[in-house]
Image 1 (cartoon, rainbow, N blue to C red):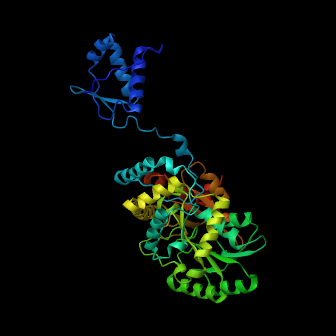
Image 2 (cartoon, rainbow, N blue to C red):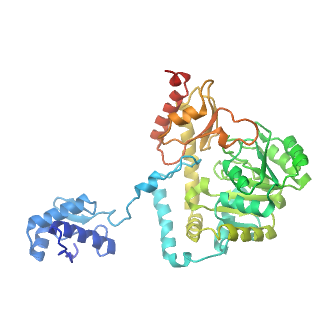
Image 3 (tube, one colour):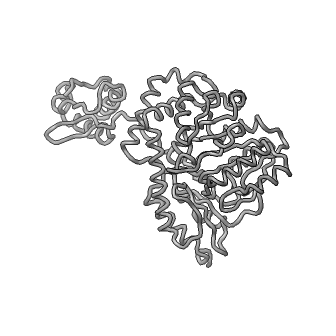
Length: 455
């Protein structure tokens, strides 16, 4: 038990509220710590010269606020969670269901390790509030190189950059290699971000024919000859939205075509870290032609807004640094410090492994709930690519599922070449629990029945 007595309780409020406020204030200041035992109620009443009932009401008020816990025969103690920052319900509600999100860590030990990384950030807070290098410090780039090595990438440090997220990195690269009116090739069904960035830079996107293995070498060769493009954009592993992964042989064939025409590749490896045995990046077969972007949004967390990028050459890395400085100034030093700490202490790999395991579990839930529904997916994908039955329109399904914690995106957002089919990307990740996901998917399955739109 500590020798504690509240100060400044003559505030005009009822005494019991003033004492509860004093407990909260002293917890916040650190004068009272987690687990500290408060003075017995009668003793504190005698010390303050007030009625016992007032102190009893004060302790009850503090317990109602979650500041203390009382145990019969033992006394009143500062709560283990007292003084912890309050969770912000508005941030929970701010989840963007239009994005393809990974499942969120729920393991208490892993979450505790993640929070532990903030100790390093806090200890260096003032330094981290300064302007810093546009592509990361040497320590950050070393951590990036270590992380990229899990994909078999071992580039020279002069080619490695920490950049402010894959989206901003693509924008920076297009600002370097294109001008308005130029053409960039991509999949016929592709990541919406590259469509938005290309439109912003007034760059023409040409979608390439795809088969069950992805973009075909013949279509790539023909389009290069026809359009004289500046680059090819590919999302080759667990492609968003189709979940398709280009197999090794096809990757080698595409690399041969790129080398023949000396065409630049922008390789968006957003999901490459998730599967246990993902094919090697195309960058390994054409390193001097490839901008390889290892985004962290899908394998660690989108809120970091970081990517680990490998430029085709040290000179290209310098140009990337200049473009980042112009467009974004720099990646967040706070995010870089936290990520570097997580990589060094193994927490980042723990997050990645959790996401891998949980995404597989959610795919199993989808198989159960959507039995008989026409969709394609992959074991560790965060989404399914669903084909609607005849007579059911994508806009109608999206409208009927509005308000549910299930991210649905119609095919219009992904289609570059040809007409959008009646398809939906259904995201299985985000903050929704397994139970909530199962309920939502069963509701979706019922909604897909043509009879749901009758009457």
